[in-house]
Image (cartoon, rainbow, N blue to C red):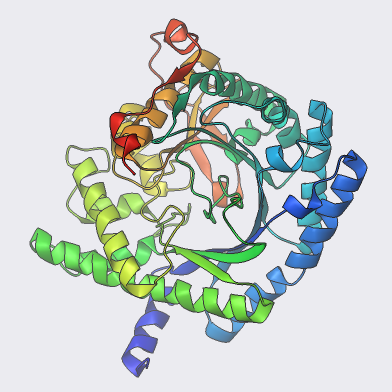
Length: 454
């Protein structure tokens, strides 16, 4: 039973602390759409997305109205398109046509983003997977709400360095083709190691082949709620701090569980998981950096930042798993620079650097996220950044990712404007020493020895 105190407490979290459900994401399998004819394939894809997700936006709005819980985004993720298009697609243009089909279907049902223009190449690339990867710059330049991801490594298989090297080039090409929008295409492209099958957050969402035909996944968020709770225990011990974060995460996750169950029942689609990630926005008071500073840091990036983030990430997970039996996705704390006002402030002052962010990714949910870098950064350097982050994920048996944006025509000290939930970001400096010979070796970095446990 929910008592009056809990209802009032939840109302306060929504009205004063910016608690929201960041996304309801419907995962849709497109495996039954596979066809050898490209036109028939696109028609099947369009029809299935429209049929399955036609009431998703309406359902989210009804739940939001009935419970007074803001639901920021309604999204769809689909089976990795490199698999769906493998039989029909013979050119990059064939894959781009699928991307345009996804875009039309997404606009028809009224969602914010559609993810799954993806390839999973942690051990090697099929011809179709290479074609899809090579089509990414054109696909993201010619669509509005399609998101793309590529998984280049895992703890079990190692890191496909051929794919890592290729992705450095692809990111630069995507930046060039969208340079008139501050290289916005790169904000819709993420490179993973250990990508999960059930992630509801963009740009990395795709519907894994281990999933059912359709599923509802929910991503909750509440940085402001956690910051407010920590403010009430200022100066207390780490034990009290951890308990406070854990209890708060439990309450936030219960809200997500409620929304997920309601959406599942109303749509007649199985409930999948709740993702516990604390995802910030550019709004004041909705910042992960603010949480870390409330713990006692003068500014995020100061010594102690990685330890504070480790506490936050672990306690969020401990509280969340008590609130829902089905926790998945990424779950923890996101540290995107452009989407977090506190991170932006620290980066502008030089307190938060790319190297410090990389250290923080050892203990956070994802990795180097929404970081704007100079447009003249070599593609080999971008590949090196991806390799470093993938190695952290591979060795530590966790998901890591890279979403960097080389903003063409801009340099350190300039700003990139992405708009909406993506916000804006200062251009951050990148180490100028070359890694070209290293990333160009080719082949695969072997999996670590502990990957052979089973």
